Each structure stands twice: as structure tokens, then as C-alpha cells.
Length: 290
Image (cartoon, rainbow, N blue to C red; front, side, top):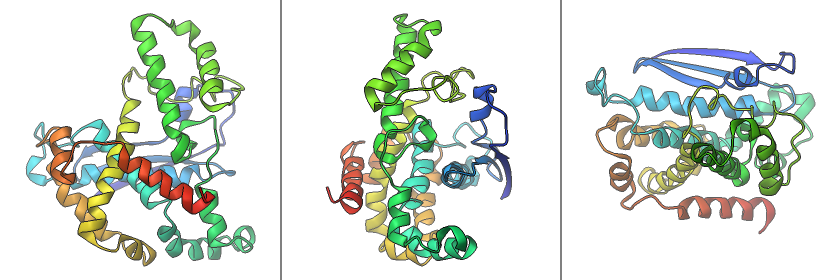
């Protein structure tokens, strides 16, 4: 595999073209053997770390499509929702798990001893899973993330029906952010302009993120049964067994099956919200005792 990783920084002057600003977090495939990722880093948060995991999930999916499907209409991921399931799985269900950090946190502490020497593993785990309303979708925690998607979806429907004019979007966005998340939006850069999707013409894309969250949680259940002790493997830094399972059951299939067909083949049942809700409840119980 040829991997190209472009890295950007927040050393850009605000205000700037927000659509360009937020576009610096993508994965692109020139072919099954040529996967290109772009990410960005901030000095005051972990967005770059988890964003890189997210885009790696996209890249692994495209790289795992069966070679016999290359250069055919079937030679890509089953759907945008399936694609987001892979990125959200590696970002959240793997990258924000306690076993993942049992392996990597000592290395992180050794790399940044001044910043992390007084921070325990449990404190770090709570910090990377902290639940709080936020302005930015890509920085949102797992529990509030889908509220950002709900806002986008409702506004897209309103635009298409003519109930909301484009000129009214900033005002309506700010009102709905306050209603859904209790957040006051300070400016449009961190508000309605924060994502590139609308300016790029990708209306209808945002629901694929919520679909991805649902798929990811549902896929993780049979993966645990089939692969065995995923937690123990992650704690030892072993991720190949999970990737192998995803390769066999999802990646290699490309577009051979429709999303409803493939999710039933992989999990034995139609797509459901319950696995995601169960995952979020478990994590809330671990971190907050609720």
C-alpha cells in the first residue's frame, strides 16, 4: 500500500474561509493500493489524534476491498454509511477504549513526561471520553455527536423543502444549537460554516455519520464473539485480529451486497440502534457511574 499523509496545523489566521479550514481532514483513494490521508493538529486538544484514527479507518476500508473487484463498479465500500462505520469504529470503539490506552498511555507518558507524569491512566481515559456539549462536530464526544448530525439533517430537509432560506441558515443554526446542545455560537466559523460538506454540494451526507455509528456498534458485537478477547488484544497492542475480521466480513466485499444485505450477513439481523445505545450506556456507567 502506498500511504500519503498530509499534516496541517492550526497556524492559520482566523477568520478565514471556514469551508477550506475544515476540509483538512479527509481520506482519498486513487486505487486500492494508493490511499491518501490528510489530518490536522491543534496545540490545545486531541482532535488531530482521533481525527487521524478516523481517516485511517476510511483508508483501511478502501485498501481492504478485494483485488478482484478493482477497476469495477463494485471496487469500493458498500455505502457512505458503511464507510463511516469503519472510521468511527477505529476512532471511538477502538481509539477511545480503555484497553487501547492500557497499551499506549505509558508510551504517551514517556513521550510527554512533563505534561502527563501526574495524570493516571484512569484520568486520561475519562478525559478522552468526557461528555459535554460542544461547538464543533468533529470534536464532539460519542454521546452528543449525533445531536450535531440531527441539526444538520433537519436543516437540510428545511432547505430542500423551502422552509429555510440559505440566507437564514446562520440564525437558525444558532437557535438550534442553543436548543439541542445549550451552546451559544460565537461566530459562523465555529457555527454553520464549520464543515465543508454544504459548500462542496454534499447535501445529504451528514446522516451517514449517524448510520456509521450505528453500524460500528452492531459490527463490534459479532467481532467480539468471533475474534475472542479484543480487550486483551488491544491492551497488548494487537489490532490485526480485528482488522482481519473486518477485512473478511466487510472490506473485501466491496459493493457486492447492498447495505441492508451486508449488515444482515455480518450480524444476522437488520440495523438497530440498540447496540450503540448499549455501548454508550456501558461507557457512561464506567466513567460516570450512571
